Image (cartoon, rainbow, N blue to C red):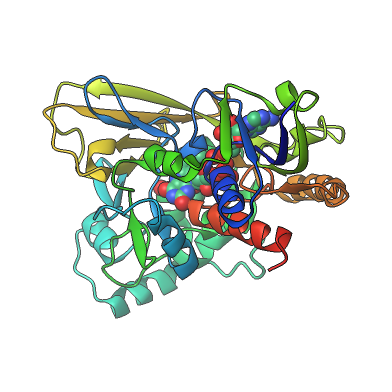
Length: 365
Ligand code: FAD
Ligand code: UDP
């Protein structure tokens, strides 16, 4: 039986970062097990038979202002020049989202200065007192009309519950801008790794002391493989056989289609806060800066599909997660890292940072 120093459960960005860092910084042997038949976790991407780029689990753009994360990623890939811009389809037109001066000008057919926008919003802002939920955050910034138009329907579709039932941080991720900045992310760095996310992560795992088993669940190896310590990036509740009940995670079905047109929409992502059965449509060639006579698009249907994508953050789920975390803290030889295992709404750069910090901690830095 081979003895490993480290068992990494999950080959998403958190697991790959942990595996790479441990292999490079120690002389130990690392085994990575991944239950899906590919590495990359939810950031997995690939070129399909037509040569078109597809991200199987929805649109992913790496964005970060962290020098450490950027330097780390730069060891394995260069980011392309893509700048993520999102449109929202409201009242039949596509307007820039998040809400900025250009959004309101297009929507209301007016010309605005920042000061005028601020005044108009001031007349609409609702004094909610303490911000308690995902609706309060929005109405306190832009009022009820814009909330109804851009947020209520989208959030209801995305999470399957009304915004009032969700924590403020869910919609609090989205800024309101009193300027003309139509970028989705304003971090110092953003883009898609040249060659794709999967290639970047396979470079991370290409270390002689890292072994990767795809199509392999933790349960398949836990009794047959010897290891000293584990980094676990799967669902937090799964690790404990859901003894306290299931933590709510939102699944999404990603409906992929290739189309016989060279361009389907004017932006990488268009959001649909209205009655459409999907939340957003992604056209990947924008993101990969791909010139091709055809195009690949993805429609997102939240509430369907199998893979857990998002922790559903509410007072109740936080309390349940806290109970599981107490159990997790008692596991002396296991660390819980990443979006599923920490039960936090982490972006990729935060998942990378969390894995780097965990390895620092394990190695006594
Ligand atoms: P995951 O990617 O979920 O990886 C965990 C892996 O563990 C999975 O591959 C899973 O199969 C495996 N696993 C679980 N249990 C077991 C087990 N028992 N045995 C073996 N393997 C197991 N972030 C951004 O920064 N920018 C974006 O634009 C962005 N867009 C997003 C869009 C969508 C639709 C979603 C859902 C998320 C988006 N994110 C984005 C967040 C990003 O996906 C996460 O930050 C990132 O994937 C977290 O990586 P992870 O390794 O923690 O988790
Ligand atoms: N949201 C919304 N309308 C939009 C975009 C986002 O109401 O057009 C809300 C929704 O609740 C969503 C949250 O803001 O879940 C965060 O949006 P983000 O784009 O960050 O979601 P992600 O990319 O993580 O799916």
